Amino acid sequence: MKRLIFAVLVALVSTSAIAEKSDSKAETKTEAAVFSLSGNVIDEVSGEALVGVEVKVEGSDVKTYTDFDGHFVFDNLKAGQCKLVSSYTSYNKNEKTFQVNSKASQVKIELQASK
Image 1: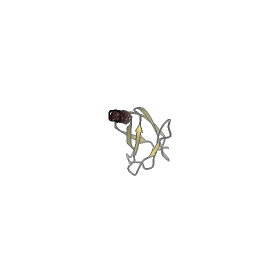
Image 2 (image 1 turned 60 degrees about the horizontal axis):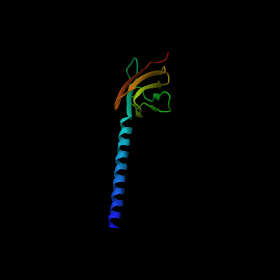
Image 3 (image 1 turned 90 degrees about the horizontal axis):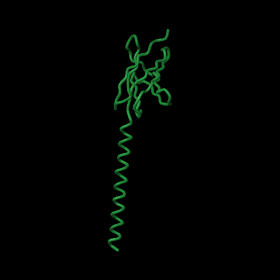
Image 4 (image 1 turned 90 degrees about the vertical axis):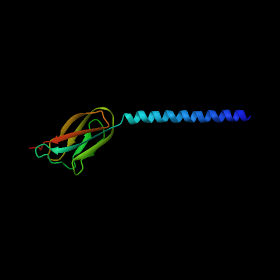
């Protein structure tokens, strides 16, 4: 009887250890596919940082706004091409495609004042 109980306990411990190992592999694969894209939005002529510019990832609901230094960040992006659409009052809308392929991609967007 003791051998049977011991065998059942060993089987349970082995099963849970295998399940934990599988979960950690799945988490590693998910983390490897997640990237960040950040950058700055500036005035094309003066080079000044623009505050409050809406920056959207085309084809999704993902958007953000630039901070006081004209800086923005997108987290959790998939690898590949990413088209960003930037719009700001009294400036022409800007559309640019960037390659997202490293943990921290950095971009610069220049907006042109509308006439």
